[in-house]
Image (cartoon, rainbow, N blue to C red; front, side):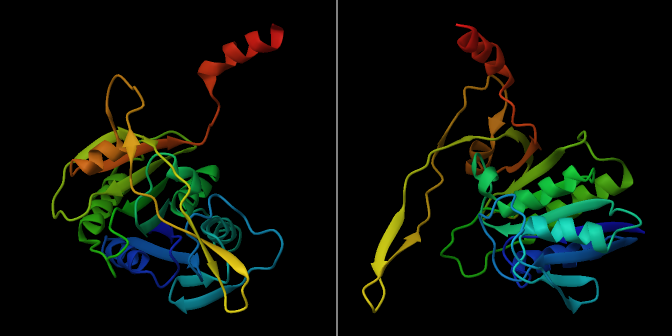
Length: 259
């Protein structure tokens, strides 16, 4: 039996993770185990909970929520408790509501679920559906078909990346069919979007807002960025590595130290 461990960062009740569970369960000889956060943990990054206890709560057969846990907690604890004897064959994190492109990958709890998987030498995928956040639900049908086809390809063959690298998939909005482009992570433009309010007692609080998907090319000679692919209606698949070393700057840094 081929076993897939699923998590997300939108919470165990999110439409995306329920759609992911349903479509992966359609694949022959596949067992899907879901361990998802009890609450939304968007933009929590690759964080572990170290200051309070965590508790699994059964939701359904092979479906658990982790009380106030992060996606990283979900994978970490599932592997140490539910998979002590044998690891799952694959980790899939998603389907996220919203994009995870460019440097947003460092914020993403969805990407973090896949990061934790590859840290334990398990092939891993993060998948996100780009959408307008004013939409109440969103359409995950193309994302479902895409992940099903890719998982079947992996199951029947092999995972295309070496250790400590994962697939980061973004699905374009408002299309029923799309070709796949292999992309690099684009250069995201950021701004400070926070809103100051006061509660009934006059105390100030801040609410972080949303940023538009503004980007620019990185100057890479070949290929297309994830932002460009999505803007042109392609499915973006980016291979992500966990090694953050800036190798091209090592010699420059050594010269600066020596000088």
